[in-house]
Length: 148
Image 1 (cartoon, one colour):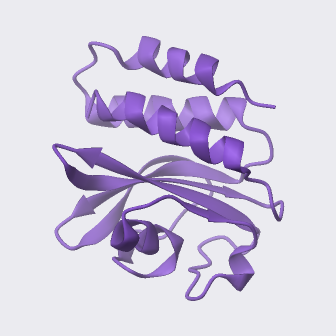
Image 2 (cartoon, rainbow, N blue to C red; image 1 turned 90 degrees about the vertical axis):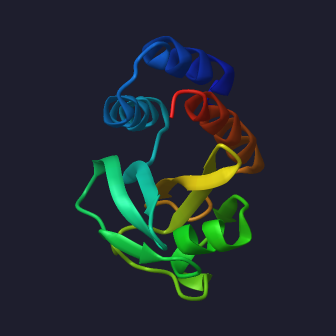
């Protein structure tokens, strides 16, 4: 079981006072990769214009652009809410960047009241993410929003 309060404290410690977006996102994805078991991708997509564009991540190569409303990431932006997907193969319009992914959680990130992008985490395990993960990762994103 992941202790999200400690994970958030660690994120705060490594990003506080650091003015470099890419460095903060890279370290945040590395922190998630190190502390969450059973992942095959953990990273960020940033809104650029009207689409999500790949940012820092840990894992295999990934889709570079995602349209709003498409796939789990695009749906998270369109609905402006966290998407907790038990089985991605049952999600309408799922984008299979890595065919090994079986479950996914995507949390919108906000800066100045607008969607900045998303935190996207995939797992090869069906049903990997729980309501506890959702709550913990939303808190993780709140820490990150303070430095973006």
